Amino acid sequence: MYDYKSLRVAVADGVAQVTIDNPPVNLLDTTLIGDLGHFIGTVRDDSSVRVIVFESANPDFFLAHVDFQYMEHPEQFAALAALVPGDATLNPMQSLHLAVRSLPQLTIAKLRGRLRGGGNEFAMAADLRFAAAGETWLSQIESRIGIIPGGGGTQLLPRLVGRARALEVILGGELYDARTAELYGWINRALPPEELDATVDSLARNIAERRPEQIAAAKAAVEGALVPGDLGAALARESAALAAVYPAPDDVVARVGRAVRAGAQTFEGELDLENAVARA
Image 1 (cartoon, rainbow, N blue to C red):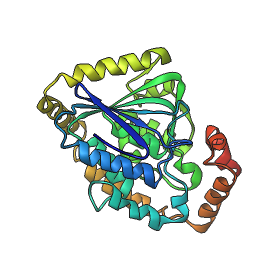
Image 2: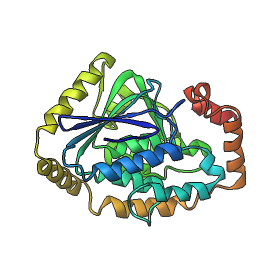
Image 3: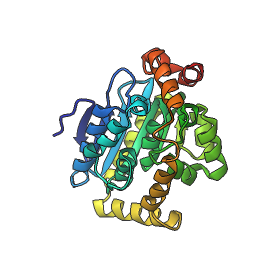
Image 4: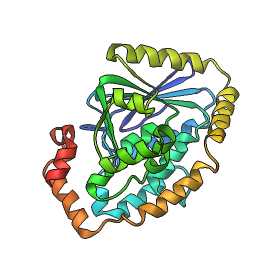
């Protein structure tokens, strides 16, 4: 049904299982962003799919983050717009995440491993998030590299955790465990690792028994109840704020370059990315 370089997709009983597999750390690079954009643009019109579950083939990384190389090459980041569906007035990651949020199907992020920056924003764009306790860590790391979240993080996170905690997460740049994320409302539940698959699979099959119109209507109604105004307008405000810090000044670009050369995007470097960036 689908053929991608960094995704494996299997559809059964109304549920699309999407396994992210972009070694070594599931970096959001051109390949993965392009595959996600194509999948989302295709599946929205597939009436046989009522629920989409995103998971990772790598137990250490759900989605690492957006490729740091785009700091040095903002023109390459802008070129990603051709790979994702959505509003041309938004940046590519905003468009991707708004497209996820706007799918008529229910989306579930089944989380294991680390997800930082754009990886966390992608998970927040999903409708539901379930994580393996003790095996999942979340972060908005952008403040550590001299910018702010720009893929929807400043708008999606406050909707989940509130203003004060969102500022703590965004400006602190720390790595949060699944239990704390559950306490904050960042994720639906932190589950014992051995229960995660069965819990998500059962919920996905249950919801897939609903009519597509029910799922789409419920999502639209709940979204409309959240806050005045729509997410697209909020993302436009975020985009304007991001313009103040990205493209980044030369010293920030140089620091990110040093971090990459020191191994920030290797498997070992990603395991302790906060300190790797701090040392650069």
